[in-house]
Image (cartoon, rainbow, N blue to C red):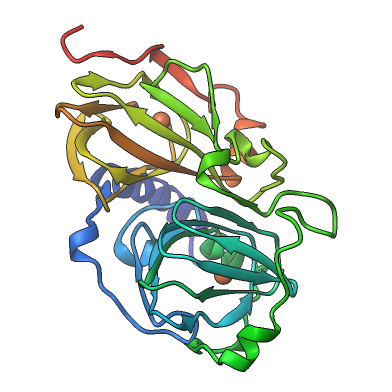
Length: 310
Ligand SMILES: [Fe+2]
Ligand SMILES: [Fe+2]
């Protein structure tokens, strides 16, 4: 047998170098759209396949044409944000309505499918821990139906929404924009809690992936400056830049920013006259490290959001 230990040491160096040199922003304008059995049109944003050194997680963007639905499938947990359009999700045969701004938590291995019943195409952003689940042989993905156009006879039989909560254990499945909880935090111009940090707020019980919060950075301001394990930001509104590991990365609405695994210091800047709004995804694997490694937690260098000149 070859010296496997020598290979481990070499790999450790390669891992460090890969994270240092990797891209930090997935540009919304240069996505590689494809058609799959699940989605009529879908593109990976932050993902191993697009060159990002993720902690076994990914972010993608998908489009459901008018009067279409996605495939029906099951896999690990998923967190979904509806960026545009309206319709409903069928999850474990129950209906959960959505419109612009709705978030969904899909529990582990619950069959689910999204239907577009509105007048414009639906766009949704989705976070998964599929690469991690697959690499530890826990990632079965099963396709039950393929994406197709809606059958009016089938739509007519779909029941009404009964609840935003899951019948199995009472956890929350959906939340609309007007239900988002404004916090008292001052790390950004404003912070809304959705599933919350670690995915356990507002009735949610997300473990693998959560849409934790929305940050609003005010015109000509900067966020707190800090370090923590991996997180993703999807730019909902405005434009600005982030300093991550001492390097500046510009972004605009529709882009996704990768704060990589490791403790890379970062801060977000809004040099414009309009609000900047970011949707934050967090993956549960970070807590596997936070819980065992002192220091692998959140460190704040400057605690509060301030004006750019301060
Ligand atoms: Fe899914
Ligand atoms: Fe951060």
